[in-house]
Length: 98
Image: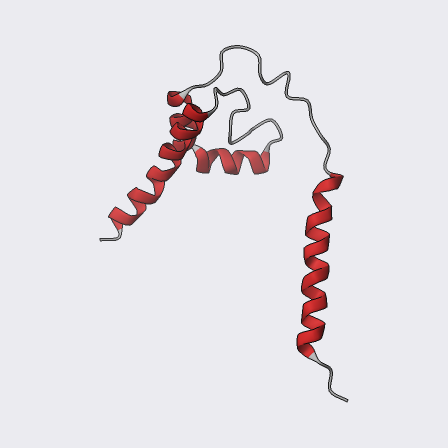
């Protein structure tokens, strides 16, 4: 007897989606009060953090006390600087291929 593979594939996909949706609920919440002391990072801090984002990502995978995105930031200006800084890597890579 032949199994209906599309029906089986749907249930496998639905089960994976359910597990990936429920898995973050097991994460431990950490207090950020210790991170938000001092002056918040602004546009220039975001720009710098965006430029070093690939290195920050590798460091975040290796060490627990490294973060890619500063929790102590001033909001939109930090995010804009981070966006510009991290977008520079893509622009440099496209120019090198020509």
